[in-house]
Image 1 (cartoon, helix red, strand yellow):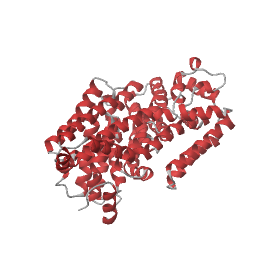
Image 2 (image 1 turned 60 degrees about the horizontal axis):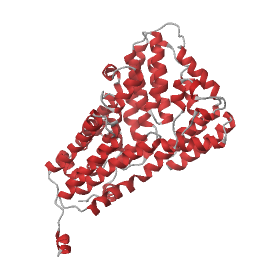
Image 3 (image 1 turned 120 degrees about the horizontal axis):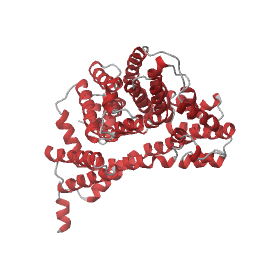
Length: 489
């Protein structure tokens, strides 16, 4: 009797009100719990997943189905998890070899007063692209550049904006960045295809931004005097590393692998192996130190005669990071977020919301506009850019494919409305970090962060004009829809 009842039990389709309640639970737990009360983000995401599971069971879904939905979603994310772990190891071995420190060392020595602002953009952009972390770029070179600006009595707001813009530029385009990997993952596209697609919005926005910074900076002149903190940083790097042009080889391998469309993981592991060899040859570090850095990050104690107590603080911030274990927190966040996403998708909550939002949208331009606006709203209410990247990608896969747009267009939209906007939201994780590290409030540098406004606008323009939009055939779109588990009409 009980078995027959179980067999007859039907899973109801969620109403729009129930779907909105599920989405509001995400807003509540993340914005209030994490944003206001500073509770752990992962715990808040699990609370959202638990509430969503309760709603799904209310509709008739059993626990085995819920558990299966979570498992299937996490299985799909595993290739990106492998990449993220490898990125952590790549960063630490690039520091071990001296590749990353060399980029900073020479970058800080090309500055002149009238070009400080555009140079701030380029230095942070190069560093963030090479390391995959905008925060690391702003927290090291950015702090030094703010010190230079203070010494030269140049307004800090435009300098801070250039630092943030350059850092987000590199964070957005680097195949080593967690947000870049996450955007490609959530949209369901190839990592390098995603990076190439972003060039359409990011490069034009960067060009306009740099021109504006250059014109404004020309009013500042005079002799350049290297601030003491920057000189100390350069001197410490000189003590640790021996510089050689060959140290750029690991970075060149990554760049060439991207341009040649080679598989991501093999390219990364080749560059890691080369970096370890270069560290042993040019820096005199031991193989054991290289393997330790690979797993748990580079430490100053690996350098003979150096220790944390007597080493420049900015240099410590720069080099003591990376390793496989450094990505654990990000990966845990992804697992927690996808637990929610898996349940919400299986129960039909996300599909109901997206159908209600853009069910009547029939054009490519309107679809892109809706995705950009959704990404921006989720970035603001979600506090963390990760929420926006994951949810926008999940929500708009089907609408983009129905318009026969390749999913690399969607992953680009996720970053145009997520990664770029997050840096100008005062209460977001990025906004709080940049303001704290640079000592310049978000609302002060916001008017100078031109890229944050240009990228979303370009994304919408491209949606309506077709410029920079990669289209696919109807057969390819249908095949991708089936692959992702969507019904093909």
